[in-house]
Amino acid sequence: MGLKILTEHINVPGIETLEVYRKHGGYKSVEKALKTMSPEEVVEEVKTSGLRGRGGAGFPAGMKWSFLAKPEGVPRYLVCNADESEPGTFKDRWYMEKNPHGLIEGMITSSYALGANTSYIYIRGELMFILRILEKAIAEAYAAGLLGKNILGSGYDLDLHVAPGGGAYICGEETALLESLEGKRGNPRNKPPFPAVKGLFQRPTVVNNVETISSVPWIVNNSGAEYAKVGIGRSTGTKLISASGNINNPGVYEIELGVPVEEFIYSDEYCGGIWKGRQLKAVVPGGSSVPILPANLILKTAEGEQRLMTYESLSDGGFVTGSMMGSGAFIVFDEAQCIVRNTWNYSRFYHHESCGQCSPCREGTGWMEKVLHRIEYGHGHQQDIDLLVSVAKQIEGNTICPLGDAAAWPVAAAIRHFRDEFEWHIKHPKEATAPGAVYRGQLDAVTA
Amino acid sequence: MAETINEVKFSDAAMAEMQRYISHYPEDRHKSALLPILHIAQAEFGGWVSPEVMDKIAEILDIQPIEVYEVATFYTMFNLKPVGKHVLEVCRTGPCALRGSDELIDTLKRKLNIEEGETTADGMFTLKPVECLASCGTGPMLQVRELFYENIDSEERVDEFLAMMRQKEHEIPTWAQ
Image: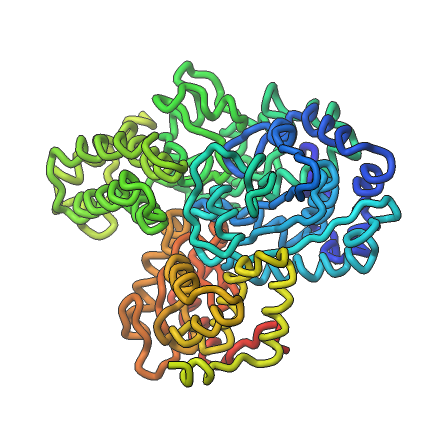
């Protein structure tokens, strides 16, 4: 079963109410931190825990906290990034819907650690129904003296607000999020200055993902050292995995980092195997931005070692034979799926979501979408494959924010691992565009 | 033009809700409430925001109208043209596509006899494919106003859904109740 740090009580009826949440140990970390620990001690525990940012970048959360500038007399902010928009990712939405107090407790304890007296949860506008769940829970917390002035008599004040976005993937990037929270277009800012120095309203700000913040109460209650015992190596703790695609049991699973990928796909405890009795063709293990891997490389590394659900194991082999943990969005493809069509779909997404600020991304994503569209619809040229590789290379690393990389990587990886499928589309347009046609050469090679 | 602007009048409930959002930000940072206010305006005025409504928002926030236009045109949730009673926002992104969102969009087009971005002649439905809605485990799915309708994976489910929507009154946002 494994330890459940975030989801132990998630299926308890009424856990979304303060009363039931408290009955199951809720808000203990607020009491402990505010009454018995200094803010610095909370930061130290989070550092010791090895908790890494759960939004996708995997940067150590405690270290991010320690970068926060603390100029005298200037307010600081904690902003929760609930703009969950990475295709394949739905863990935060699920968690907030079921257990809103889990996030609010994390916000209070974390805000105390950072010395913030006003904090915001920026949630994507499409999740307005969850904004209402959070606001209801926040109102309960205010009424119970867990928010507002002099929380639990500790002398610490905190106001917590929820703010909706407007439907823009780019606002998941932390500086675009801050622009959006200020009522502007979501154009990412140049860094430096980093948000830790000049963030929301040009004041020091920490931006953390929902899951990251929600992990803090357990760390405060049980100590960072205990948290660090869970998982493997630098992949400490548990992770929420959003499992989607062609599997029997799509959903969100909390795993101890280190579960073998093969077990995660085939065990009934998790994905329950490939649906309709089909075979596994490929997996995108960390959200649409990370490289796709064919069945053989997701189950085992290039050296033949078992691939594990950890930051290190999923990226073993770099981008040549590995991928990334990303946001933990595990997208599974069965043998009937067309890689060209899927790559075109993702390119359309990134073209649609590019903010337009940097030319390589604004123009390049459009080029990739167009070229992939013509290959998918039977009008591709032989040189198109190299053209795609070239465009992807010219976007990568040449933009203000990582959306450019996120758009380039999936295309480059699809061609790296499924080049013969692209060639087949170009050489045999008639067969490739027939209804339901799928190239099977790769699969046969993989399963032979 | 001033006369037209004066015609835009928010309900008291909407005004109160807008003021609540404005109060979440520092005194000199009221513009921060622009996105929530655009959402409130869109719900208040039939699912879209007209230039007149945007001008009124600029007046409320004491900012230039262009500051509202540039934001409303950036974020895809804000409709800048009139829409049908129910805007069907169908997720078309990868994970949903693996579970049949292309088929869902095709079925809706066929049954409603409209193309993407169009509204049915009776003004009931607008079809608006959108990108990932964080519902990948329950695709194919779509959103209508604040609610998700998930696992619409067969023609029967589409029929059930459309019949239900035809019965459904315009949902009233919580703040307006």
